[in-house]
Image 1 (cartoon, rainbow, N blue to C red):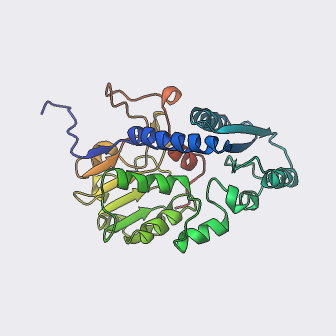
Image 2: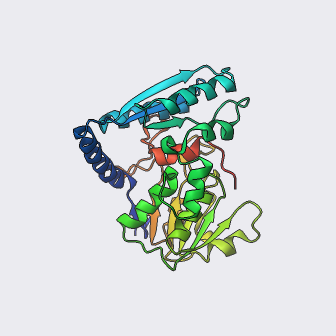
Image 3: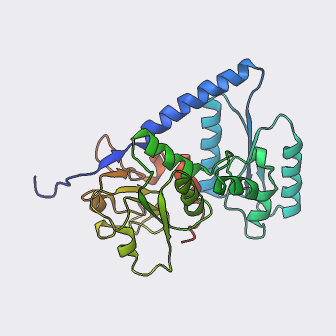
Length: 297
């Protein structure tokens, strides 16, 4: 091995490849619905002028259109009253042509996010955040699922990574990733531990994991000292480090030396070995949802 060369032991879990397969599958299902006279319609509500949120909403619309789904953006000013936003959701709930509603987070501080997201009826709750849908998840009843945990489960399925009987440690207890992820894994017969900011001797806990999932919003916090040899490591985070680069919660260079599988860094360019900049980094929706909301860990 040449001096300075990085020897990558872990197999990279290719999210872009998996995304293409899922999109093909969704496109086929949409075509079947259209043959029955049904055109799926998604409405995304964006409040304010947050630049990153605007990018995410634009990506949602672009992806939906590519799959044959009708997508409509409704943009409201930063100072919109909470009651006005609630009335809009009520109108969309009763609109029979609308099949899915998504409110882009974060919302301005004067608006109660829980009140707004819970106002969406469960049948149109694209994010899976409604209490009824969360309850179904924990009772192992089919229903809408939060996208990031669902995407992680698709990784396990695609790469034939067994979950049943495995010890899984999730670092982070947010309602977006940590808690629903734990429920999905328990439903798949895994033994699950949720670690968080109050967990003592965190490295001792994470080194017990056959599968380690990290969603804490702290750049490259997890290194090889936190990882058991041969573990599967899923990095959900997206952060800007001191150099201004987008990085995950896991130090990929370090952890790849001990892990068996690891998710690709957010802006790792597999073709040239060069890191992409923020401007041209192709971030999947799975990562964007967690990146825009500060992780509760």
